[in-house]
Image 1 (cartoon, rainbow, N blue to C red):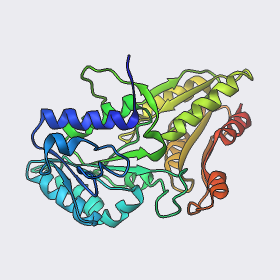
Image 2: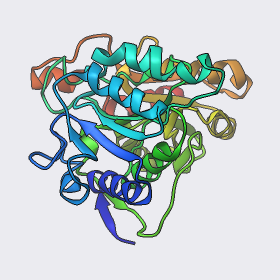
Image 3: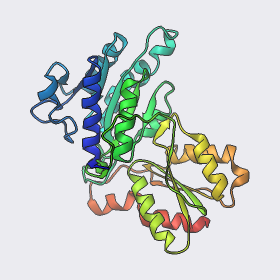
Image 4: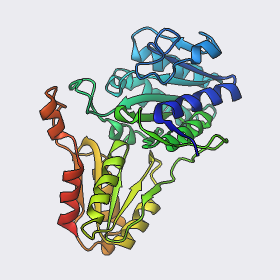
Amino acid sequence: MRRITYREALREALREEMRRDSTVFLLGEDIGRYWGGAFKVTEGLAEEFGDERVRDTPISESAIVGTAVGAAITGMRPVAEIMFGDLTTLAMDQIANQAAKIRYMFGGQTKVPLVVRTPFGAGVNIAAHHSQSLEAWYMHVPGLYVAVPSTPYDAKGLLKSAIRGNNPVIFCEHKLLYPIEGEVPEEEYTIPFGVADIKREGSDVTIVATMYMVHKALKAAEELEGEGISVEVVDPRTLTPLDKNAIISSVKKTGRLVVVSEDCKTAGVTAEIAALVAEEAIDYLDAPIKRVAEPDTPIPFSPPLEEYVIPNEKKIIKAVKEVV
């Protein structure tokens, strides 16, 4: 099977859906023919589809998402790109109070088929305003779907499903994933929301990890295998809806759980998943749940300090050894 990058997989999904459905259009800052997006995901699309369907916007996140919400409820399928995930905070009213609630408040008489693509995550030394992972914020808003793909295959399949769906989706893309390559079939496929993927099977401990942390968990699992510890790595792929059954089934098999996410530890993704297992599968646990996440601090600009706060393989291995 051919191998392409995460960036190319996202671009393919956008191109295929725009060819398939004329109501799909893109909008965002610098996504058009002169730049192709801050991370080059939309490169070449304006040349194919024109400036009407790949629309450069003013520097106003609230205007971008507000326009997208209006377009969605009138029959279009907008895909809005917010240049950095941190800046979705500037459109929080449009996302959390409008897009997420309109279908409910109108009794299902309208729908909001909207996708907000945005990069999260640290590791590129761009400081506190451009390095956060805020996906747990959006898990907390009823009415929003939240996707967290970790591979090119997942990114393409989930983005196509997001565009075709009738609910607003926050589509989270870790910055360090864009150049990562993986196998992606040329034939048509989609991935349903709410279906986790077992990235590696194991018997001694379950690691549930998201986005870029999946790759760190896999590296940690490989190292631990050399020490005789068998690790199962579960990738939820979407946080809302969350595949609770896959997580609980894995914990029932291994009896131990480590949860890894790049967002802050307090009230974050790791907290929700740990609480789920504590409520519904505590009798199957042979050891306390361990969480590996960022400390509750803004992301430092200093490269050594940034490296210190980001979860890594050593921290994951330490947590695994504490429960095994």
